Image (cartoon, rainbow, N blue to C red):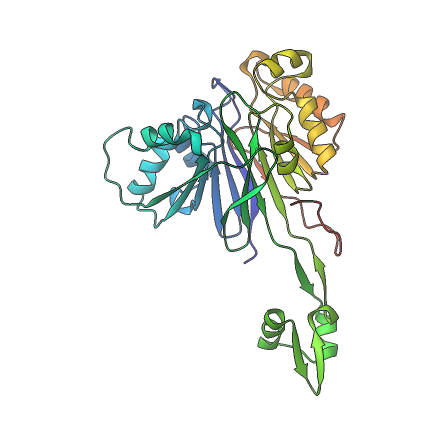
Length: 321
């Protein structure tokens, strides 16, 4: 089912929220599905401001157990029940974060009506592992290099084919027969066999990568490889690269280099340290650093929306997993 594919930014702060930046929080709208990523403190309210209704959520994905990436889980889970979300809602997180997830889910008394299904994951270093599926995507996880067990997330649409109306008409295929041809791969029409390849061209699936707190590592490269939209932390500017390495984070320049090396199409910077303040000048500095390595850079702002880029040209295949 085709539909809207975009990132809704709920918050862009790192360890501490500021007057203009809420804690982390991101919603990936993908056709008929909505995935909530890293719900930091205040996510429930930010969803209201962004027009994201809790019953629309199908999955919640947490990268690690630091508070700016998960403190909002308690409120989100309770809001799902308050709003009578139909559920079930899948909850993905690093297996090592299980004690924290349990405490957040049971932090206060409430009447739980929405089923939340837990999926702890523990991918081996350097591996990308599928951990869930939707109607039009596969969800995968890879380990990142942070101070606590951390994973990143990736969404991939399977490659497919685009039917060409003029070829279908010439082959005498129309109406329900098109669906039958798509399912079977070939179809007898007027005494001859029509193959899918005869009336269509390859269509590369779209993809999304989510890389939060980490040093440069193999897992980050796997998550970013060939994606159409890459969301990447850029906690520090490169003049503070030593601090970034000490605290296991990336600089804006490193985020740009990651996106360029991986062949990602559009890079979204987020997770900014409060040390740099806020405003257009600060955003421009982050953008300039990343843009030195990558041509399509967006500096995320709270409550902004970033579309997944339009499909690649026919016949062009992504370099993803």
